[in-house]
Length: 200
Ligand code: AP5
Image (cartoon, rainbow, N blue to C red; front, side):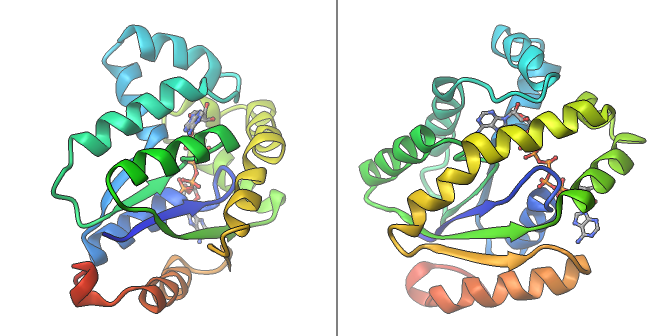
């Protein structure tokens, strides 16, 4: 199995690049933001609780997202590997993920971290907010709150994986295809296609 974390602040391009990576390498995409938005659109109790936090740009409790990821791992026993997008976002989530993967006798191969300036992040998210219907994109104060939450709680997750020499930082500004080529190169440095079951 080949498991990777696509990491970076809100608007750094995690979702955009995830789509291309899963199409090329056949990984299962697990985005906690997407899973939470599905809960919201289904108006579940979990979704209603999450919405009030997401609308303020705050993180949802660790046990909620860890539970969703645990269920998603169990629901995909035949996956060649997982691409985690927007998870883990706290050190507690990182520790929980490592334990869940160890139970399945696998681990994180690499964290690819997208580096984008704050000015560019705000510009991208406000632009997307014009059409996306995402309530957390329309208000610059909420976007700033998401970025502050990232610096306070999520950036330390990279330090956690640096201890294991698993972090590669990639410039996340430029064309989507150029960034994808750099990410692909980093993935291919770490996979032996036949053994990992990854299709190039
Ligand atoms: P989540 O859905 O994960 O959102 P996010 O991290 O804020 O990230 P975004 O989806 O906004 O950005 P992205 O990096 O995926 O960039 P994208 O490709 O979309 O989380 C939302 C909320 O859910 C959180 O605030 C929290 O409340 C909760 N949550 C989720 N996971 C959680 C967890 N694990 N724990 C606790 N709470 C959790 O691109 C952004 C825009 O830029 C797009 O319009 C795109 O077209 C554009 N773009 C992309 N690449 C480029 C480029 N190279 N050049 C120009 N534009 C580009």
